[in-house]
Image (cartoon, rainbow, N blue to C red; front, side):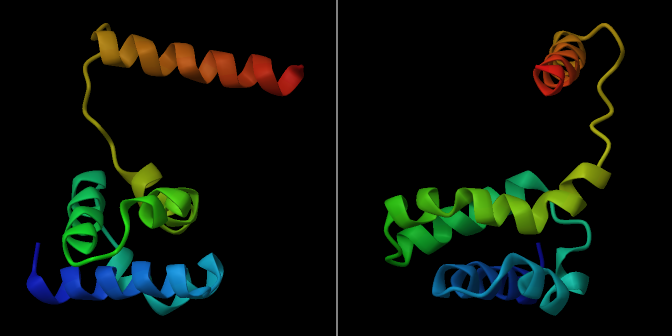
Length: 103
């Protein structure tokens, strides 16, 4: 990951923790968020912890991070072949979500 992009993503996470709304963050960092993958996000969060941000603080706002990054993460295709255990698990998960919504 380019150093500049990484620094911008760190700044985004810090702003989320300072109270900026996820929608505002998404707008401010729209170009930076393009193509972000889960591994990059977890590496950045780990670096923030190593720089002194409490692990609990990262965990507490994990759902906020996800809300901001969700759109980009959902665009990504995993390329898992049909019949692979992970593919089966993901299909089962979708079915369970539909059933839960009906309840």
